[in-house]
Amino acid sequence: MRRKQFLIGTGLAAATLTACSAYGRKPDTPAPGAPANVLTKTSEVPVGAGVIVDDLVLTQPSAGQFLAFSTTCTHAGCAVNRVADGAIVCPCHGSRFNLDGSVAQGPASRPLQTEAVTVQGDSIIRG
Image (cartoon, rainbow, N blue to C red):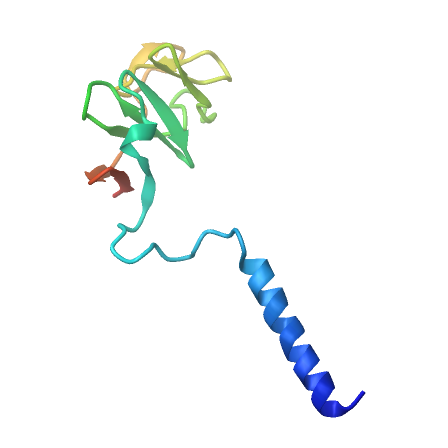
């Protein structure tokens, strides 16, 4: 094989590998015009319920009111792991929190830590 053919082949292989390894990955930066730090779309958080995204619990106690809380239970530091039947549930010792973060059932005695979120268009933004 001649040197020129080898270099062309190596270049094509590298370009193909780079393109394939990036396929399906989320971009590191938001699309132009999209807000940074998007957690989810407002449509993904049902009224009277909530979802867990990363280290946050996002709730919508009433239509258009979006709240966020740390997933760390205030009783023993376990991570709450679901929102069910209108409550945020900790699997470790049975603590339950209302959709506004307040304690619904112990042993936790303090509300979940509030986190800042804003709504921009149809997106919920951290901060």
